[in-house]
Image (cartoon, rainbow, N blue to C red; front, side, top):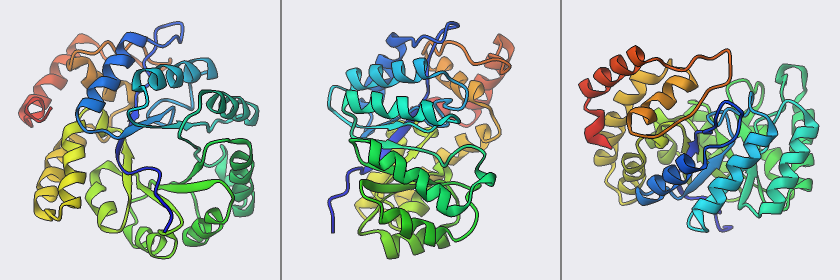
Length: 296
C-alpha cells in the first residue's frame, strides 16, 4: 500500500478579500492559526467554498500565498486550480508549482454536460502532467455515468494521488475504496456525512463546516479512528445541527458565521449581497438556540 498524502480533516478555507479583490491577510493569518490550533491537518485553498468560480486569479493566488506562508509547513496545502478557462488553469498550476504546495486539485471542467467521460479524463491528464505536485481529482453530483469506472481510469494517470468524493452515495463510495483505496487517497466531501465516509474507508475529509467547527470536526475523525464510533456519531449529530441551519445558505451567509466569531470576512462578489446587521442579529439568535458558541 502506498503512503497516503492527506489524512485527517482540512477546511475548504473561505477566501477573504476587500472590495478591490485583494486578500485581507490579517484575517487569513488568524484563520490559519485557529484551524491549526484546533486539529486541522491542512488547508484546501481556492475551491468552491473559496469562490473559485467568481474570483479572479489574482485573488486566488494571493490566498494561496497567504495561507502557505501562515501555515509555515505545519499542515498540508492543497491548491484547487480548476477554472472555467483553461489558460487560467495553467496559470494557477504554474503558480502552485512555484510555491511548492503539497498537492493540487480540480473540479471537472466547466460546462461538464458538454464533455464525454474520456474528455474529462483527458482534462485530468493535462493537469497531472503540468503539475509538479500530486493531483486530486473530483467526483461531484454532476458527474454522470460509471463513477467507479471513472475512479479506476483516474487512478491509472501518472501523478494522480487521490480523489475527493463530493457525493452522498456511500454505496458507490465503498466500491471505490474497496477497488481503488490502496492506490487512491480518498477524501470525503459531504460534511454532514463525514462519519459515513470514514466508515467506507476515507482517509480524510475536506469541507466548509470545518471552517467554523475545526475542533469538533477533528474530534469526529479522531474518535472514529480510536474505535469510539458512538462518540463520533454523537459529535456528528452536533455538527449536523449547524449544517441543518446553514445548508441552504449562500457563501456570504456561511461567512457571516465567521463574522459573528470575530473575524473580518471582507466582501463578497456582486450580485451576492453582504448580510446586513439585521441578518447577523437573527443568525446569532439561531446559532445560540442550537448552542453553536458552546461548540467552538
